[in-house]
Amino acid sequence: MMTTDETPVAATETKKRRTANTPAADLNLKDLSLSVSAKWALTPAITLMWTTPAAFGNTANLFDTSLGERITTGGGRASVTNDLKSLDTKINQHTGYLKDYLKEKYGKDNFISYFPQFGISMRGKSYSYPPDRNKRSAALKLTLAAITANALQDRTYGLAFWQDIQTKYEAALALSVNTDSSVAGLVSAKNEHRKQIQKTLNALIHILKGNYPDTYAGVLREWGFQKEKY
Image (cartoon, rainbow, N blue to C red; front, side, top):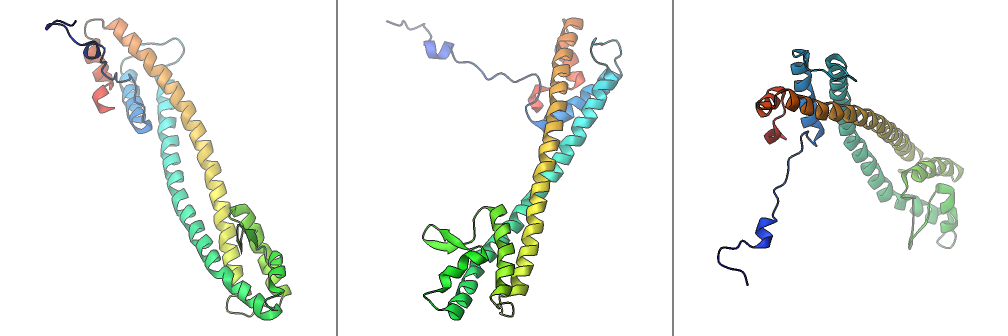
């Protein structure tokens, strides 16, 4: 039986969340690395055998640059995605006109057999363009050739209309691929800089604690290690 002055086990075992020595967020880590770089450059007595204040400063600047480029490049991806979505919607909304043209020209018993020429195939219970964008882009090229082959180029939604769609779609798709590739490269570079920065910061924390055993808390704050900010 628990006496009145005993503390429940659950209460004694409750642990407070511990804040890491370095920030998890890239933007906070960037700010900290630049702050530490500036302070270290003015404190040459603090040394590490495997790096220097200048080398760390260079890495901090590279991290700042790669992070900024990654954010800017990644931000542009949203507009490209929106363009592709708009074009997909337009394609889906106007596929029916091609079907109607073929039905009018070849009759209700034969018109479906012409769909493959246009890149249109069975999807579930209906005929449509492929949802995969690379396949859809290839299908649109078939559409252009098929419109001419079936003498539909002068229709309202004939060759001029679908040529415009295909040109914009191919350009947007290429841009999305290039953007994704650029972002992947920037993320890789950023992460490598981040790894080096965290290693150096953690080492500096230990060095500062060793050199200032009684006042290290205040010294760390002077260097920028202010946990409440991250």
